[in-house]
Image 1: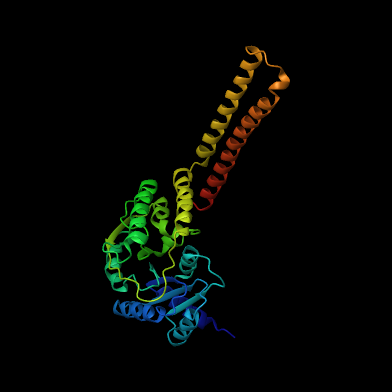
Image 2: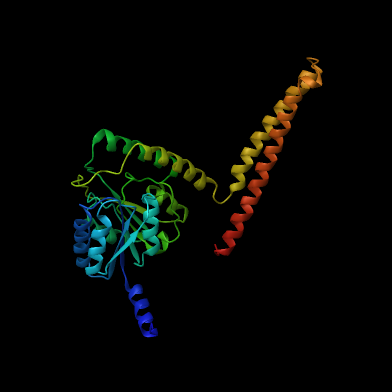
Length: 319
């Protein structure tokens, strides 16, 4: 039987956690123990209660077994196991959901990020920022496969999101807990967290961090992820522009369809009156025009409904 005193003690312990480090991993059996040791060494030196949350994103090697073995010796380590690979965003979201620390740190599990940068980033956060993003200024990756595509992607992301960071793809970031609890991640949106945070009014900065070449295991990066990033960036761009007034987006679509339908109807009138076409010859055009006009009104209606849904939700959360 669980005693009330034990529950109260557990609750107090949770409230005392200052730092939560969230690390998604997949098939990193050669790295996880070294990763745990390096993070632990840094956090112990910071002399505050902490937790390390490692999310196993469907590993098929010995990664999970090694993590469970470490967890048996050190309860600072929490392990979340996915039955299959859901992607880095889902893994990071799961870690954020479980995080209890007032300050949350995210990083990669391949030893390319250096935990020794964490204290300086935390100090920067305490200057009044909500996010401190890492900038791999001297990146230790292959030029053509990683560096060049990354530079191009960073420029595109800066343009569409308006968040001026040199390195949007760096997983090493420090956040305030209340912020990460409000951010919803899916797809490849983990690389767009600063843009999502900007919607919440977050103060964002960056600082140069160390970056090491991968020593063990295989990189999970491939060109198929580029397509996912582009799709998610398109979604995010629409989200940022129209989140508070979705009727503007649907209204533009509705106006376009109505104008197009009107032009087709005008053309039909011209064919009937000037070119002396028979009505039976333009039936298809008439049907198409009315379909466009009806679709236009539907888009406007969808926009009004979306606006009502957003405003209702806005009131419920007390904004």
